[in-house]
Image (cartoon, rainbow, N blue to C red; front, side, top):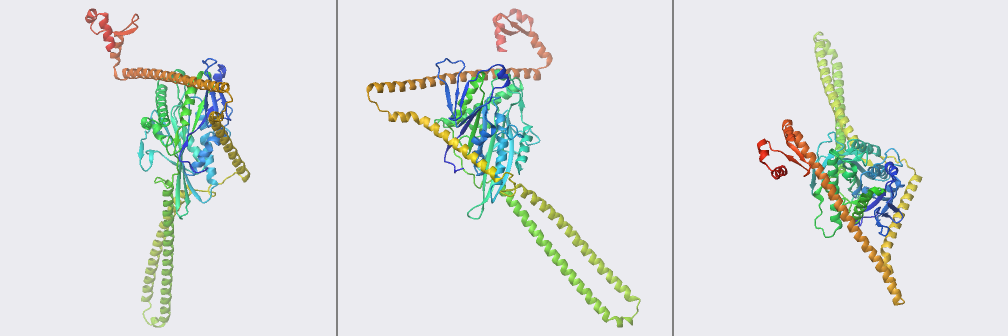
Length: 624
């Protein structure tokens, strides 16, 4: 991939799921028309009149319900993952109504190569790219978190209920304090990490989806690369890949959410609304403030939206006419996101690089091993010299004994053996003590050496060396086929972009080349142009009406949710803070007035009730 431009827009891909079994049974009508060659999707309002113009949206890529997982990965995600290994930050996030296939697109079926989602495919891709590099060292680590009801939870921690804090540092940027990180060496290990985290994710049943994601999940893969530079020193590049599976936007009237599910939906819609406000502020050039701090989701994605990252958005929609409002809102959301401009750059020699710490620790352990080896050699040399000097002393002693043998025969023979025995035994005891001490030192040295070697090997095994550590099982023919497939995908992307640019410039080109042979011809051409402009005006007016209707519907939905949550809060207060006998007294004093359609709370004293008028009782009820 070529070097990044100063600014590049967010790449947006739209995917339409097939009809569900429930929708097929209800004989739902298809409202979407997909043109994958031009990257256009057309949506039709089922309640609109025949003369109302259709709404057409253009994106980088559009995929229908027959699309495959590998097609989406090769087109939208593969270039992004390759740039992460070059040191860029990358983000992939799926957005859409609940039940439209976001989790399937992001995760899919890990055991099936044909149905693997974006995240498992990226795992395989990362380690395959590492295995094909030369003279580079890599460290790959992963983290997994979820934002559940505006609380950050670590999915890889034993205590999943622990709330983590979001911090900001001038050196490290925005990060989650105490978030666990796991160093992985291959695709199987990192896949195991994701499976462990998925077991702790918050999911639940709704009328729209049996296993609806009730939280925003973010899987983070950090790839650190060390390479020798022209100056002869190691330089480190760090790329971070954020793979985000957003919870689906939903309406309480369709999902039937109540109780806990209703609270979850309220928090989900609130964070998605904050994300929409951030996108609108970034697209609108007049906004001087971007509300990143309105939610933890937007705070974590601050670099991905208008910052230092390359971003891909996968918008998922459904074809049924019953979900027209949600599908249109998703397409508008994605269309605004396409206009966001990021400024990606390569992250070189960052302060928080773990790979440098690994290399420094490995170098320290290696120096210790070499030092231990030198010390062991010195001890062996000293022991050998002591043995040699001791043997020489014994040889001299034997010679003196032989020379003085005749003179010793004249002395008392009983005293000499005792003295010689005592001297020999003391020499032997001294020799045994030295030998025991040297053995103890040798055992201590061996234990320390074994511990250092084990630590050294464990740390070195976590470093991946391109072309050596990982065995690439694909042969040269498979590599060539993969390269050709990438070239074809890149060519299709370029052709689609050229066609979209030609469509945008077509009207301007026609206006520049227009020549009129008569006044009548000029009138006819300008009349056609006026009709086209009038149709555009009508389309914009229709858009305005739709946006107003959507805003009113969303507000009504929020008001209903607020009313339901307030009602549940009142019940909780009554159940937990009012004694049962007092609650029964209040219930006995309640009376429903069918004429005025309201409840009345009668006074405690009977004589007061006789003196009170109906108006006074109504006022009492209103105050309560």
